[in-house]
Image 1 (cartoon, rainbow, N blue to C red):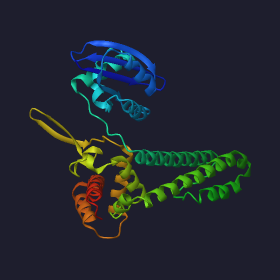
Image 2: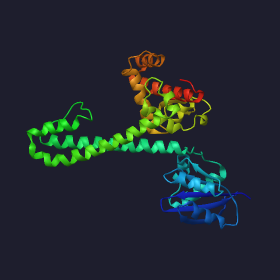
Image 3: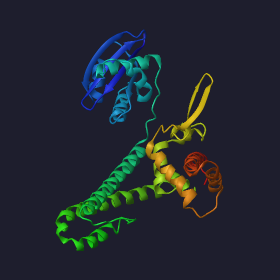
Image 4: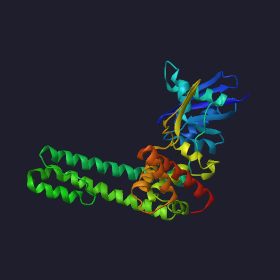
Amino acid sequence: MEYYAGLDVSLKETAICVVDAKGTIVAEGAVPSDPESILDWLGRQPFHISRAGLEIGGVSRWLREGLRAGGLNAICIDPRKLRALTKIMPIKTDRNDARSIAAAMRVGWYSEVHIKSKPSQVMQMLLTNRKTLLDKQIDMDNVIRGTLRVFGIKVSGRITHGSFESRVREALTAAPQLMDLIEPLLVARTALREQFMVLHRQLIKAVRADEACLRLMSIPGVGVLVAATFRTVIDDPARFRRSRDVGAHLGMTPRKYASGETDRNGRISKMGDASARAVLYQAGLAVLTRSQKWSKLRAWGINIAKRRGLRRAVCAVARKIAVLMHSLWKNGST
């Protein structure tokens, strides 16, 4: 008889449930969240585990790698499909979640999540940390603007990141008593800016050394950030049989509702990676509004904008760019 395990992982402890082929619970327990403890607990059970499932999360990739190295067929699953099963439970606990995961592994009602390669994971963390520093710098800018606005000093309009500090200091000449209040914020902002540039230079260096990113950047509107983000999110172009499937994977195709005589398309689904969708939208906007060079892609987008409006056209061009990027990456052309 085959046995299936469900692992509900938290930072400190993992709840484990094992069921047989009939769905009967044969073992339950809780162990520390590390591969050695989980393998030791399962190894003391008098049966062999055919499949073990755990939801994708912060430590799931590390746990999966360790469990597979120990001979366990561990699978990271998409929590969105499992959510419909756990929603009907009147009481939500780690123990009940482990039971739900074990049941899903038994009947096959799950979607396996693609685990990215180590280089892609490193690039993803680089992009995430770079964006974090940029967001904090923008937050600091807004705090400084808001503080000065209380005293009637307006630092408004389009100001570049480099000239922001000089503009603030110039504005403070009219109210030198506020310098002690603003100076610590300017120092913190400078430190954030400097460390952001450190990570930004690392990103540029990594993209220049990546052949796939260089090919992707031959597409109109695609720069360092778009190429690196797409490269990281897709990881392996062979995952998709058709290039047009990438648009749906990134949530850039319409939702659909069909029931009886009702059949309608909605807004884009917004499934998948939000960061990739955001940079692709920026790329589409750049093609339509900032690019001065003619291309078939730009002409196609402008025709859509005339019929359906700019926002729909930008989204359509963004999806087209994603499909084109995958196609070029897969066939090795520019």
